[in-house]
Image (cartoon, rainbow, N blue to C red; front, side, top):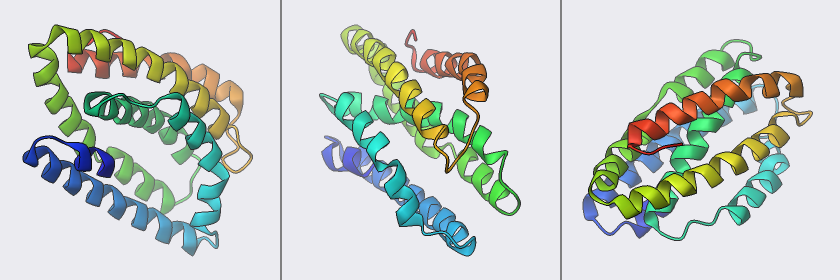
Length: 182
């Protein structure tokens, strides 16, 4: 969101995305505090998963601002579906905190509202973003599977495979809300 804010062509988008980035960072701080309270180092945990995110970033470089917005929308939506599975393994108060963070839909709401208007006006943009969304879902599912089966999260791969139809159905609903075909 911070990157999208810095590359937005409209000032209102810059402000909105900056606010959303700030909210996201607040969530990061809350989760970091909880992780630290449990005796773990959040930076070390992040380092474990950084290669997975680097591969995703490398394989899904957006060509423009719209593709960047779409990337965040698709990735966050799919990952949030999977993160809910991981959150179910948490004890309190971690579970409640994770669910509260996942229930914050401000960023998705902004992107959905912003893209829906532009997609409705521009059929070429709609076609391009629908195709981009298909690439993103394939890449995100692959990275999610790799990350969630890591021993740190220790989610059984069979559980992830079993969840994929529901995750892809949720993705299709989110794409339809944008006016795009998944």
